[in-house]
Length: 165
Image: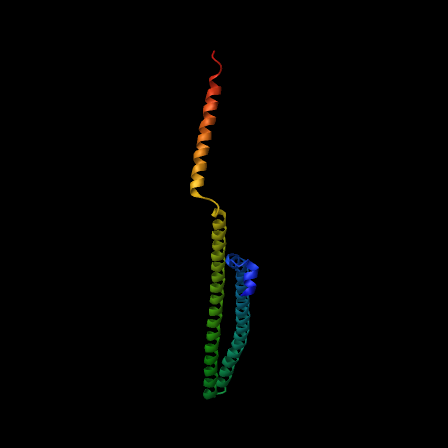
């Protein structure tokens, strides 16, 4: 705690703004890490699906071979394995879809966090700018400007009349 006080001058107000970009960068890095992990996992699952597709084709071929040889029992076992492999492929395919969906949600959440952080920074900047501005001072200034504009117009009108001709 002592470190934060010495860095911010003790008021705590600057501390949040100083850490906000770092927090956004850290969460952005975490999001990218999670998305990268999702993509790597999806790629690994796609490779496993390709292997399983080959195994499935082999089971089909083996079933046909056993059927031609008249061994229905072995052919049925091969078809059951094929069914089991297809179920595994479906599970992996659904998992890939879920990973892609999570990556999209993460990207959206990061974008939302960046937008909120930008809005907070804008609010803080506007608060700082408006801190020394008083509405009454602005009203007085506008009244004075209007008065000076009227004076300038009166002078312009007087000059436009010319000399008594």
